[in-house]
Length: 266
Image (cartoon, rainbow, N blue to C red; front, side, top):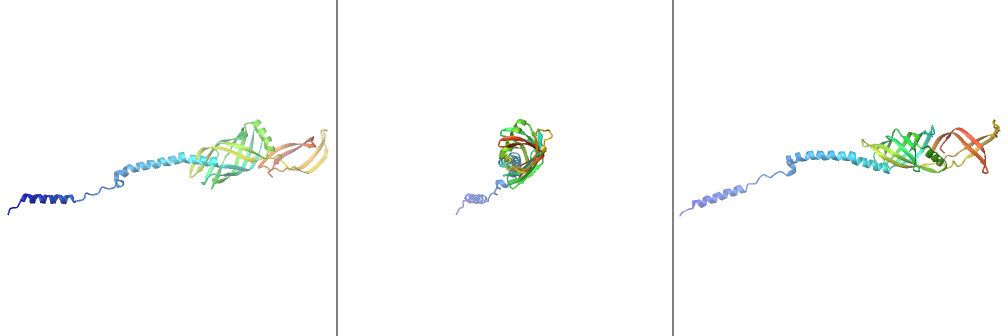
């Protein structure tokens, strides 16, 4: 009986190749586990974070701060005017700022604030110091020096203020806001503020009336009157010398003068 040795060798070789085919190749690591991936990604991530921080600090935060200031309202409950002259006066204003946003913020006015009434510029004021706001509101206690730049407009305003129930001041300028340890400078300030006025000083009451004698100049008689004047406005103002006309049944009888007078609130 004869054997074909070549056929047996070929079968043996095929079996050996099959064994090699069954050996599994080592699995390649996933892309996010590769060193080259992280070498490429880490610098890009750092750059992206830096860009995001810059955008937040210099683009997004100023826009948010400006939007909050645009929505904020200012209400002055007390305005004290002292040392008035034809060109300047000192003003202390106390009140409240509302709708300032949820963050704690320090608010300051870096330059001049222009004050207008009825589209007429009255003058400018410099407001030093810082006001604080938190939880959507803040108290204002502002001490400023006001400079009259339009005497004609200010005279018209003064007459209106004495007779009207209220008036509207328009404030225009810049302000700085510090929040979250970041200061945003030169935000736009444009606010209308309604202030209660003197309303003609109603309710004047004569407490005492006397005629102590003749006028030394020989032009009439002396009159002394103690009066109580109700001031319904938020304004307390040093008026100095005040001259009032006295009339009876639409007939002018004369004038009385009060010196060193301060118009108190209430």
